[in-house]
Length: 143
Image (cartoon, rainbow, N blue to C red):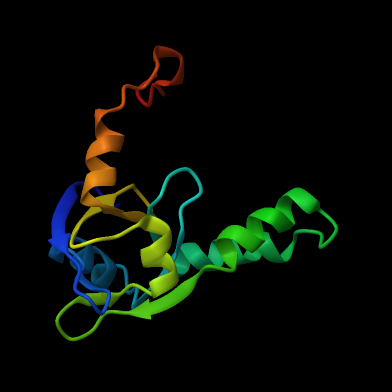
């Protein structure tokens, strides 16, 4: 499980350090790679451990090529995917297409989302966190 948020920077080449806590969780789970893709609900990069990506691939492969709704989603999110390795310094290279999509500038925030991780531009993350969740949209995870 990934949780918490960690502020980092991203350099001009698109490299940013994956938080140590997340690297340790990946190593403990034997996850050597991440798959980066667009996140569907806001401008962020979603980082999935390879095993989570493989589960998603199985679902995508069962989708009919004539299912227009599914194909639009595959085109948008699956086709933007990039498999990445961590370098020796624990950095991830975020491809330009994903940096542009998420509008990543110098200051970024890594956010643990349970089974996945998201990477936000700092300003976009701050804006997202300032928005109230309407009472009808609050999920009761305890009930």
